[in-house]
Structure formats: C-alpha cells, structure tokens
Image 1 (tube, rainbow over the protein chains, first blue to last red):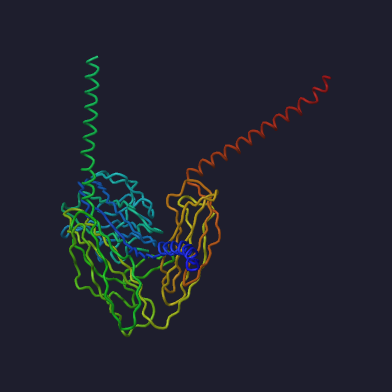
Image 2 (cartoon, rainbow over the protein chains, first blue to last red):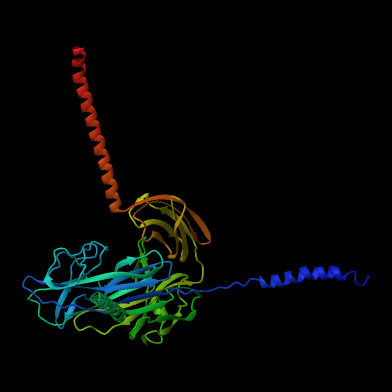
Length: 197
Length: 317
C-alpha cells in the first residue's frame, strides 16, 4: 500500500506538468525579421512625336506624356525634368533649330513665341496647360510653356512626403513654328529623373 | 404576341452582342496602353555605408524591367548635394568640394534588360586614404537609353540611388528640432512642417511620426517618414495628408526621433476648408449680415413710424 502511496500524487503531478510543458513548447516564440528593400519605379511613354504645319503668324502643336512613379520609400520622391544635353535645349534638324521657350517654370511664356518649344505641367510654377492634344492650331493666348533646362540644372516637377503608388504627372509639350522655319525633322531629348528624398 | 417575343429576342441578342464586344475590346485597349509605357525600377533607393580611409567595398543595385519592352540602360555616378530647407537636390560637382563620383567603379557602363528581368549592377566604392573623415554623398543613376525619335522629343527615364557614406574618424553628431508648425487655417491638403537642423559633421536619420485625428477622436492619418539630414543643413520635413476632405477640424500629434532622442510634437488644431467651402461659408455669412442689416433697417423704420404716429394717437384720445 505504501508503495502505491505516491502513485496518485505523481499521476496528478504529471497530469498538470506534462500539458504545461507541451503548452509551453507550443507557445514558444520565434522572432521573424523581414527586410523589405526600398524600390522606386518610373514609367513614361519613351517618345513623343509632334508634327506642326506652319502658318504665317505661327501654328502650335501640343501633346502630352504621362510619367508614373511608385516608391515604398517613406521619404517620398522627387521628380525632375531637364534636357539631356548639357549644352543646348534646342530641337535640332541638321543646322536648323527650334529654340526652347524663354520662359521659366516660375514665369512661363504666354503666348508661346513662334519657332520655340517648351513644357508645361499643371499645378507647377506659373503654368496654364492644355487639357487635350491639338495639332497645328493658332498659337494659344492661354497656354504657357517653359524651356527645358540643361542637364546640370533640372527643374523639380513634384516632391512628395511619403510612399507613392502609381503617382502620375502629365507633362505637356508645345511647339510653335511659322513659315520661315525650314521643314525637316527636329529632335531633342528630355530626361525625367526620379529619386528618393 | 409572336412579334413581341421576336422583338424581345432580337433586342436581347443585340445587347448580348454589345456586351460581348465590350468584353472583347476592353482587354485590347488595356493591352495597347500597357505596351506604350516603358518601366524602370531601381533598388535600393538609398544606401548608408561606413568606410575606413583607404578602404573599398563591393555592392550591387538591382535594376528591374516591369514593362513589356526590352531596353538598354546606362549606369553612372554623380555627386549629391542639397540646397535650401526644402532640399533641392543637385547632382553637379561643387567647385572646390570632393567629387565622390570618382570613388565609384562599374565593370560595365551599359546593360541590356528584357521584360520581367532583374539585372544586378555591381559597383565598387574606393575611398581614398587621403580624404578627411566625415560624410560624403553621391548617387548611382540607372538611365534608359531610348533610340532617338525621328520627329519630336525622345524621353529618357532615370532613377537614382543615393549613397550616404561615412569616412570613419573624428566626427560630431549634433542636431536639434528647430520648429514644428501647422497653420491653423488651411486649404486641402492638410500640411505641417518639422524643421530639423544638423549642426554636426555627419548625416543622421530623422524619423517623423504623426497622427491626424478628427474632432470625434477618430484617426484619419498615421504618417511616418524617415529622412536623412545632411551636415550643416536645416531640413524642412513635410507632414502631408493626401486627399484631405474639403472641410474639417483636425488635431495633429506626433514625434521626431533623431540621434537617439525623441522630441514630442505639440498638439496642433487645424481647420481645413477648400476654396469652394470658403465661398459657400462666405456667402452664407454675407447673407446673414444682409438679413441682419435689413432687419435692423426695418426695426428702425417701425420705431420711426411709432414715434411719428404716437403723439397723434394721443391727440385723438
């Protein structure tokens, strides 16, 4: 009988201790550290073809390109625009050129002068931009354009405070030509820069 | 009756055809718009690294093509500096200052990337042994090389990854929270600004956390942003609530953590009112004032009449 005296308390002890051991094993914690890398994405049309049929006082063609930026960086991002060239922002066709609008982002030119080209972004600086593309119309007395700055001093189009998902910026381009401008294919290259803040 | 059934069947078929056409056309429209866009992704957006003088380090930045067209891209480094409290970024060399672009080396200047592909671009940073200790800043750019268009504007997209480099040695880590401001009357978007000064010789991170609550205590925005503050600069860090409702009264609380210390941002109350809401409230206010004026004029005239007719009435009695 004495031999069996400890069996009952031992049974109860095991009854309480074992499950608690099992439970404590089940609830042991594992810390999982996940490093999510910061990324930034930019997308745009890549090219913008603008054709203008000149008229005596000057005809204007406007078209747009949409830049979309996403970033998971909580610092936000800055979008800048500049001409890709460090020395000239002209549209060039051999020895012929169409010069950049004399206006700046803060004080854009309106109306756009004949034989010039520039950009316009709604809500930025002093711009008043078109809302629809048009070809070879009379030069607008409303829409204002600035010349693209040289590569060393890009203009800021947008600066955000935190993360962004598919944040779009519509950049309008306008080119005006009168009949004194020799026909030809005029080209220039613009760079959009996206960078975290 | 048969005619009616036939008509219904014809109408049903017609609408089904239109529905089917929509189903068939819509994916085509989306597919077309997707193919016209090129896409460039860069990771990480910034790097923070420490070096001993004369040391070097290898690393990679990831370039991803999430678009539907293959393209070539170039990689290169530039210096990085800022101006003004809004941190206008500049990538041009500063006369007289060290241009750390020369510290970066790439085995290749151009790469080709296919849709859906990730390219790890290797780089080596070589820190000269003669350089002084402190903070140095640069950017690695990845830039799409689009072929020149025949007529018009060729567009190049480029993304930058900022490098915050510390050259080990004697340094001063010092900064302070200069101010925290949110104007009491604002138009959407609701915005506040925190100004943090770095008076040391090394950059540091400033982590801004803020909560915007409405007048019932419901949280409308949890804002969080981490920004690097460069030596000898003041950085104005915006706290912005995108798509703020056109009208409301809000309470902003928050904190800024930098250099191991946390400063509490005192509570600010902000009334947000869009231009339209201002016009409506202004209109109502003007209307109320006009009604009050009319009421007062009417009251004045009534009293005048009473005064005029009062003695006559007495005379009649």
